[in-house]
Amino acid sequence: MKWLKLSWLNVIRNTRRSLIAVSIVALGAFSLIIAAGYVLASYEGLRESTIQGGLGHIQLALPNAFSDKEIDQGGFSAIQQQKIQQQLATMPEVRLSTERILFEGLASTGDITIAIMGRGVNIAKEQKITLFTPIIKGKNLPYNVVQDTTINEQDIYTAVIGDVLARDLKVRVGDSITLLASTAYQGINAIDVVVVGINRSGIPEMDARSVMIPVSAAKILRDSDSVNRLVISLNETRDTDKISQQISQQINHVTQKNWLQLFPYYQNVVSLYNNIFGVMGCIILLVVLLSVNNTMVMAIMERVAESGTLRALGFSQQRISALFALEGFIVGLCGILSGIVSASLVIVFINISQFEMPPLPGRSIGYPLFINWDLPAILFISMAMLASCTLAAWLPAKKMLKMDVINAINHY
Image (cartoon, rainbow, N blue to C red):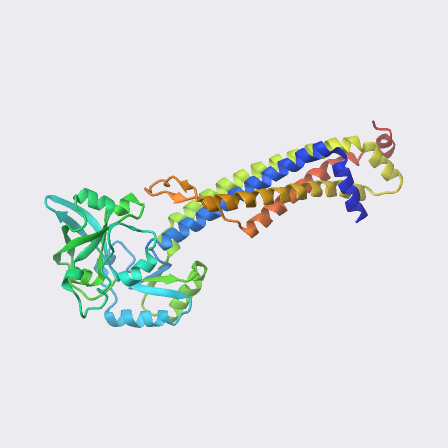
């Protein structure tokens, strides 16, 4: 305890110089915490917006069906679908599972014909998965088109399309369009549907091709009762690997892909941000290291004679260098605590204010600025900063202590 008190007194001996060093450490800690919080929030936002934008956590299909020719591979029969969904319902981590029928074809109205990527959905479940594709005009698909019994024919032939596609087709809510697609038996079929809603995912390429119709209408268009995808939504994203393993063990004759396999772009973003943050973090740590080193070199050079006297009285070089290292540790600790407090206040302010950020490249919708307060990241940053400050004080002290005791005592 006496050594800690002595180190503290040495730190405040030159208050202005110590405050400058503490301020630089605080600024470095503040910058790293804000940057780490923004990066982690970006990871989380991209991950959850992708999963809840319609991809789901896991998708199931027939063996070898995840390919360019998937639409021609058939799908789960009604009995297979029911059996698999019953098995999934026994897993507490699974929030829900829903069926989809994927198809590609053409949408036309008047003289305009555009290639589309469509899906037939159970809207009662689909809207619980697809949270980030809001309806901007009209309404969603009718809810009573769930079972093939008690179907209102008017509700079957409805569609929700992307806003870019609606603009290109020159249609509005209430207009009719014709959908043309290949059947499960390699034939051609067409149906007329009424546009009841227009949605926007924020991805122009998707909004220019997206058509969503009820499962019942998709079965008629495809001339088949099978569904080629089962989409699984979990309560927590961290359970994805666990449920994937359970599916492999309990459900036979299916192929599965999780959200990361279906959206490999996420890993590229993570790698890019990690590289950027790593370089920035190294630069900030280097600045802190040089700043504290400069402060401690000045303090050490002023106390060469004092150190020589301590050595003459029998104190070891290790004890004296540890004293200087402890001073660097105190400077770092004060700066880090100040940086954590100021960063926390700024994070709270930004998260409450909900500033709007411009759209990311390839998207047409902005997003609210949010910064995570991540304890593991803050602890890692704090440990790195403390190690840098301690090292910045210990290195010059060790070099100074190599001086002969007599020369050190006579130093001025």
